[in-house]
Length: 428
Image (cartoon, rainbow, N blue to C red; front, side):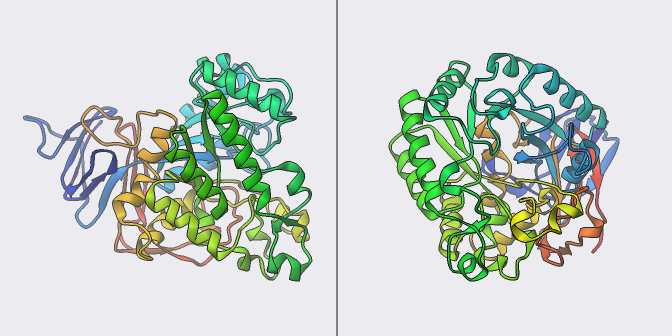
């Protein structure tokens, strides 16, 4: 299959391109940017006049549930949701059942997702066996099977000694370690940010120090072991300050933030809205604004969905008993583009945080559209809007606090390896 996408505004942040240029695809790769090669006749021409053409989005953290939790979602539904959101590469979290701590599970996920053909699914391997935080996993075997990073998901490690050994072992193989910065003891049974809202509602609270204490410990161990550490889903201004200082001192540490953390705060939990039960919890307005600044200046180089789909019952119990998480694949681009509308980011910077930024964190060859690059493309309408209705979501999980929100940038086409895997409505 050959395709030309013509007349669009091509934004490729990795190569500092922001211009009206055509791109031409033959098979699975981009063969030309600008003029078409001589005698090239595409099988399909996509008219992108008035649209933005950018690399397919890359999501560093999505729980796809299968295998083991198909009552919440399946690979089929969630990869379809990713394609509908313009996402062409997803790193799935290791907290499946069985856990992604051996090559067989990695191969199963890769084989199933490849057969579905909607989105490229890459596995994040378990840092410890069974995610129990005690014995290290066989990281070499996981890497050989295709894991691009290792993580203990949200599960705590047994001790700082286990963390040190894990970082040293991962460093041997050049693996990036994803850390969920949270002190398990300080978190206790909390479900909301420790502040005025949790106090008024009487909810068990999680202090800001649960994150900052963990970040301080992890930074010390990262420096000691020379490990490539990536912080998953930062939520506090203290943590962003510590990260910025560590980067200035030469540590190879990176971080991402969940898209919903850049918009909602502890005030949205008011009324016991279980749709806003997330981990880490929504923090203060000052925290949210600090996260936005860190995204703008590159201290935080990736925005992710932190996608966690749930069945309806999981969100219909009393707030502390509900399962935390948001179904976020289909709102990732919309939430990112709202930051542009609100003047927090310019469009190329915003797209960098969901394309080349996450790709560079784990050394992926995606998130760019130069000649020879994989033809993963997202085409969206920047000047048009769409409304999120949970009943129309492709994801099996409809748990979102953004019901009825108006988003810029409806997706017109998503291409994976040169194939159109999603076609959106051409008019709104």
